[in-house]
Amino acid sequence: MKKQQIQQQEQTTAYDKKVTHDMFLIVMEWLEKYIEIVYKDEFPDWENRKQIHDNNIKRKDIYSNPEMAENTLSTQLLLFESTSGDKASFIREEIKQEFYQWISVVGINENNCPERLKQFIFGINEILEGRGEKIRREVENRRPLVEPNSPEYMEQVKKLFAHTQVISQEEIKTEESLVGKTHKDIVIESKFSSGSIEQGEEAFKRIASGVSSSHGSGFHFFPQKGQQKRTNSEIIQDVRQNPRNWRIDEIVVEYDNYGRVRQEMVLIHQSANLNDYDQRTGKLNLAGNPVYQASRFNAEEVAQINQALNITQQQAQVKQEPYKWSWQ
Image (cartoon, rainbow, N blue to C red; front, side):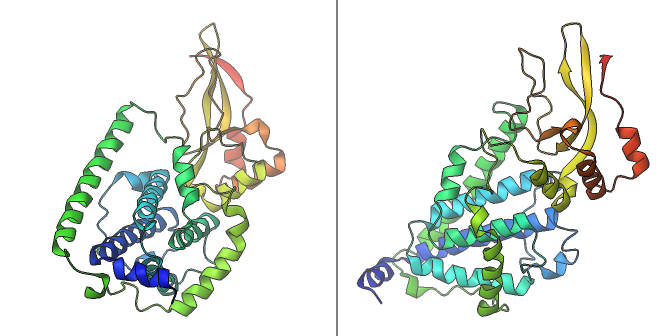
């Protein structure tokens, strides 16, 4: 063992070890809750697969808003990166073994794992290996899900503040109880010990091999300001993988000077802001807003979207009315 590693171990306190493991378990709670909400079709038996049955997440708003569940998972992952980033590498290595056990025991692999979930699993491992610069960089440029100073935004701030206060109080109690102790004085049992480290690591490597090249630029933990527009194929792939996040609807896309509105059929992601109109032109702001006009898709692409969303031919014909101006 290198001299620097020995010094790290000698200087590592029991509190450092305990708080890092605790933050990891919070991330895993949110990861399991995220899978429960977003990927219940892919894992209909998730109740039997999941490992944290005493889950402390009681929020109700995330069940009808998977985007919010993902955003909160990313936030918890950012907090974990901040907590673990300056800790001794051997602590992160211990936790990485637990992570591999979790992958093994829940039975996630390259064949049943949805693409976006693969990216999160890869990202968690990157942080455990001390490479957390991506999530730190992205949080500085993230686009809020709701408008700042709106009632929804203030409500989120209150919830985050309350949650942070609870964690801070618990950390103070933990620190006081471990004063003077080193990492050797406490033993932390893995919650996922029934899983195989070796099998989990092999499963992770196969998952990682398919997403490592796209993780740097094609995936974002948080929606980014000025994020480049996605191609039609990328949009359709997302619709196929996460159909519950999308819908087709007819909405107002433009106001004119005569008090009329123009409506169009659009493909809408649930995170879209449908009240973001340009004050000068009266048009719905589509820059970075996941609202896609039907006219951008050709007939074959429309058929693929309809199939992904289980829209029948008869329903599609009703929806494909000519775009029109109408009095408001």
